[in-house]
Length: 228
Length: 228
DNA sequence: TTTAAAATATGATATTTATCACTTTTTTAA
DNA sequence: TTAAAAAAGTGATAAATATCATATTTTAAA
Image (cartoon, rainbow over all chains, first blue to last red):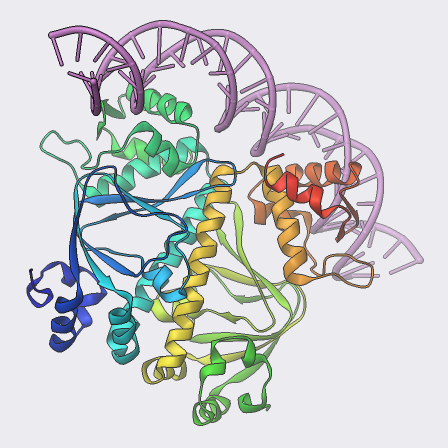
C-alpha cells in the first residue's frame, strides 16, 4: 500500500495542505481502487462514504435530466478530487461518474476528511477556494448553455479540451470521447454534434479519425466560439 | 446603528454560527446601506471589499455573455449572503447584482469574514455547506439549460418563483420581474418569453396583469416543466 | 474470423427559437 | 398633465436544432 505522505498527486489538490500526521492517518484508512474503462465510480443517488482522489485516468461526471437525456457536467482527471460536494452536504450524490479510460483512484473515508476539515483551517480554506472556483465555472457554463448556439459551444468545448488535456504524438486531443459524449457535454443531440464536427472538418478547422480529433485552426475555432 | 447580535436576519444564513464576541466585532465594522430599485450593489469586474447580508428586498445576480446578452444566474433575497464567492477566491466579481426593489443590506468587510472563517470551524463548515448547495443547484440549472426546451424552463421557473417568493393578497407571485428579466432567467429572447407566457395564459394555466403573475393550474404547469 | 451490436454518418423533415419590424400599452420624468 | 421613453405584445420570417429513418463503419464478442 503506497503512502499518502509520499504521493505526488496530492500536490495538485487541497490535500497538499494536510500535515504529516494527518497524511499518515489518511494512509492508514485510504484504499486504492482500479476502475476499468466504462465502469462507474459512483452512481446518481448513491450515498458516498468518502471522497476519491484521482491518481490516473479520466472520468465523466454526469446527471440525467428529467427528459431522460444525460448531461456531462465535468471531466475529472489525475490530481482532482471527486465527491467533495456530496460529502460536505451529507446527501446522496446528484451525479454519476463513469471512467473514460482505465483509472486508478484512492478512496478516503468521509470521517477522515471531515475531521481534517474541522481541525485544519488551511485545508478547509483550500476546499472553500476550490468550491468557489467550481461555482464560478458553473456560472460560466450556465451562461454558455443559455446564450450560445450549439456551434459556439462545440467550438469552445474543443478548445477547452485541447488546453486542458493537451495532444498526443499525432496532435490529437488527449481524451477519448464518443460523439455521444461530446453531444452530452455541449447539450445537444448526437446527430447535431456529428454534423457540426463534419462541418468543421470540411472547413479544415479540425480533422479527425474516429475519436482522435485535432485542431488545425484554433484562431478560427475561437472566432466561432465567440459567435462569428 | 443596529447590532448584529440582535439582528434576526443572521439566523437565516451562515452568520448564525458566529459567537457573541464575533458578532460584536462585526457590529463595529459593518455598515448599512439602502439600495434603490434598479441600482447596482456591485458590477461585473468590480473588486468586492467584503460581503453583503441582505436585510430586505430582492436583487438579480447576472452575467453578460460573450454574445452581449445578459443571463440571470440567481435571485438573492432577505436573509441571503452575497459576494462570498469573490471574497473566498479573492478575485474580481464575475457577476453583477441589481436591486429589483428597494433594498437594505449590511456590508461586512472582507478581513472580518476571513478572520472568522479561519477561526471558527462551525462558521466555515456552514459556508462550505452553503457553497455545496449552490454547486448542486448550479448543476441542475446546467442540465435544464442544456436539455430542456424554453417552454419547460419557463414553466419550471414560474413554479420555482412561486415556491420561493410566495404570493401576495391577489395570489400573484411576490416578485417584480420584467418580461426581459424572465427571458434572462430562462435564457431566451424576450419576445419568446412573452409569447410563451401568453400561451400559458390562453390555456388558463396562469394569468397576469402587468408584472403580477398568478399560477392557476400548477399541476398542469408541472407537467409542462417535465416535458408533456 | 465471423457476426452481432454499437457507433458514426447523412438525408429529409418537423419543431423550436431568434430576429426584425412594427403597434400598443405602461411608466417615467419634465 | 403630458410628452417621451421604455416595456409589452404580435406577426412574418429566418435560422437553429431535433427527430426519424436508414446507411455505413467500427468495435466487441462468440
